Amino acid sequence: MVRGISYIAAIAAAFSGMLGAGAAQAKANWTRAETRHFVFFSSGQPAELETFAIEAEKFDAMLRARFNIPEDEIVNRLTIYVLPDGASVAKLMGDPNSGLAGFYKASPEGSFAVSNRDRADSKFESSGQQVLFHEYTHHFFSRYLPAAYPVWLGEGFAEYYSTTTFKKDGTYTYGAPVWGRAYGLVEGKQIPIRTILFNGTEGMDARTADIFYGRSWLFTHSMMSTPEGLKTLDTYIADLNHGLDPKEAAQKDFGDLDALDKAVEKMERQPLTMFTSKLPVTFDAGYVAVRLDEPQSRLIELQLQRRAQEDKVPARDALRALAAAYPGRADVLYELAEAEYDVARQTTGEAAENVALAETETAADRVLAIQPGHARANVLKAEVMLDRYGSKDGNYIAARKYLVKANRADTDDPLPLYLYYQSYAQNGEHPPEIALDGLYQSFSRAKEVTDFRIALAYALVDERRYDEAIQLVRFLAGDPHGGAQGKAILAELLQAKQTYEESGEAPPADAKGASAQLQGSGNS
View 1 (cartoon, rainbow, N blue to C red):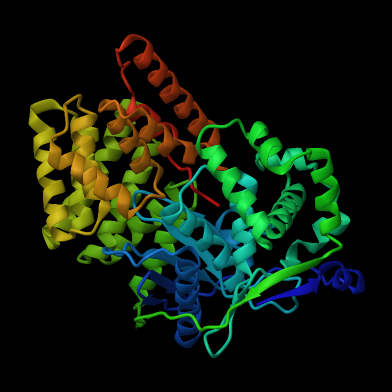
View 2 (tube, rainbow, N blue to C red; view 1 turned 90 degrees about the vertical axis):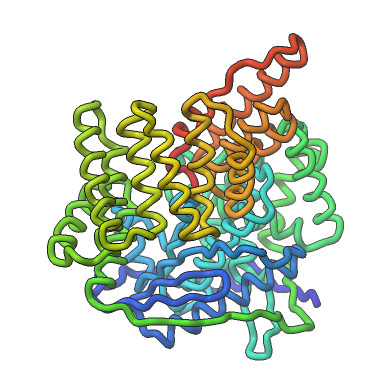
């Protein structure tokens, strides 16, 4: 059922203040909860977390039904850290005044999102649930509906579905107004539609970016609200994914852009539509929770700090102290090993890097001495051997043995499969069929991970399957955080295809270098 809402009328009546600064995060025991599709960590009340987690499962079920996405044969859960409030998220990221309330990051280590437990005091504020739904939409589209979405459309989809709500009977509504974008749309300086369509948010201040998000959502919302608009969006996305120039695609599918600019402005004053389901969403949460002890809780705080912050040294130093206090705990030592490896990858100078890698290997060895079957510790051991010793003295062969152990310990983990393939490709060896099959499996389980996507693209190039490789890389070109590098790789592959078609000779492809270029992309 579709019903209209007057957006501008409510704005004209009054507009409340933005979110206030939250209190500093208190030390508390965290709860770890698992559902079918998620792993949650929260320092809040367990009952509150259960409600939050079940709503997330409902949201996943709604998106699967909406886009006809079947359940995964092998579930690769998304980790979600739930902080007390939006201010805690901004503080975590080192900018308390940024207004950042959550984010999402795709990573070979494991994709994760950060949200908060804020309750909206008015419709002009975003709740923690709305933030999570926004970030999970990014994850869902990246994993299950990957395409060359321009920045405006990726953010527009995330905003559009973020306002989804569920009633007690299981019915749901999506496409409600994103009131939090109201002030920017009404009071802010309007951004031309050409800027929305053809640029990202790079270089924009927070206020301008807010207007960008608002106009992106409003245009997306209008297109999603009619059969004609949906058909136009489908055609537009298809055109982009077939390589049509973005400006040509926009003019072809949206018509006169000056007229479109005026039309989007009028949308701010027109009723908006939203969808209400007639049938309840069906889902199986499978909720299980456990309260973590003090060292486990501290470990989660430091794990999040390590994964979220750019500077890895503070988390590494704190983990060293925690490991000194709990020298017999494999979980603490493993997290220390990851932190040591993070620091090693940021270290410049061969001598300093070798010292940092030695620290990583020592920490990984301590984990394996306690728990030989620890999957990710075996992965780390292999990575350090490859980085520290290279191909000397058969270390590629020895490293692969650790990757095999990791795979046997956790057959569902995509990371050992990816690294097993890379142990051949980056050593200049032709990967055997089993390694290539593993690469396909790793990508199928985590299509959102840039490293997996690039490796598979270059593997396809090696087989002269240029069109498939190019299609994989087009997805990266629209990444708001790695689009420039993605476009560079796309240009390289397009040139490689042209060279091959003209001469029949394939130029060498540098998968290792391309992957390194895009390390760290995926925040949203």
